[in-house]
Image (cartoon, rainbow, N blue to C red; front, side):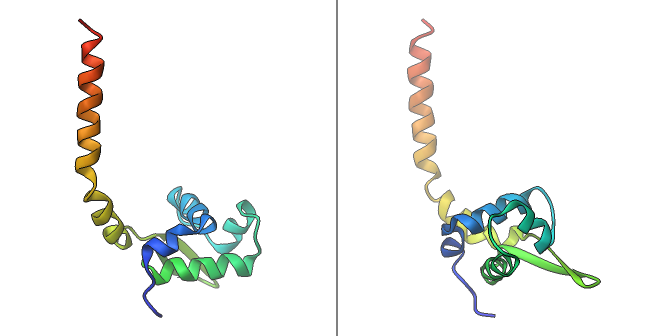
Length: 104
């Protein structure tokens, strides 16, 4: 399976909706089809992209496949977003200073 870019995988709103559902716990394709306005085959296709990006793992349970979030796949995303942390910290520091001025 070709390794996909996790940023491209997460750029699609349907795949983000799948990730949001999987964040609540593992589920199968039928579970996802119940909460998404797309077909079972479309859900399977989107899961394939997420698996190729390392964001979702799959386990067999009899004839069913159970999908869950693969936290290890988020390392590239976490590292990139983390490189902008200083901007958040600076903004929070400015907000704290601004809010502190009103307390005097």
